[in-house]
Length: 242
Image (tube, rainbow, N blue to C red; front, side, top):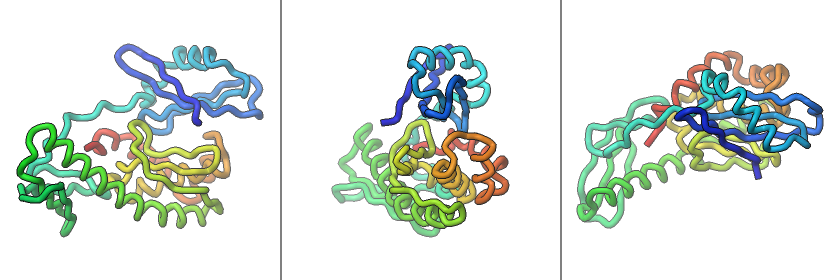
């Protein structure tokens, strides 16, 4: 299980994960790879108290470097005329009441047609639509992400143990010590170029664990303009919400 922690800084919460390495003897390194994604690389015997104290001491720097996830905008109402992002494009919703017993979603001609049972009202209706939308994105992510992982993995000469789709509130993706890659289903809201960067970012960890100069040179083998894409990804957090 990944070791994690949280530190409050004013009104913000800094969530961080810890990677312990026997090759580190004294230094503790903090990196921010995307909004809300804070990683601490530390020696094996570093206490949790020392890690927390380090985060508190560097809290201002972490916040300045997007170490706190951007607050989500107001929840969508899921009514006709609204839109959802898909592969970087804005897709308009058409919502219709039906006599059916479940929410049905159809995507065609870059439009979402959503059929909602007439009996559903208020919060029950909202949650039913949101669950159906999430299920649709999860299904698409399970279809579209593994081929990208395979293609970019061949460029980098690596292959993960598994590719999983998860509901990750803070991170776009993660790589576990057993080489399993976990992707946020919201990744399908991003433009294809940013999805490829995200995939390369995680696959590079299979060759170099810490975010070192060597690590970024591996990322560059698949994504030469990774700096530009990394910055664009930092700006996407608030758009990729449901």
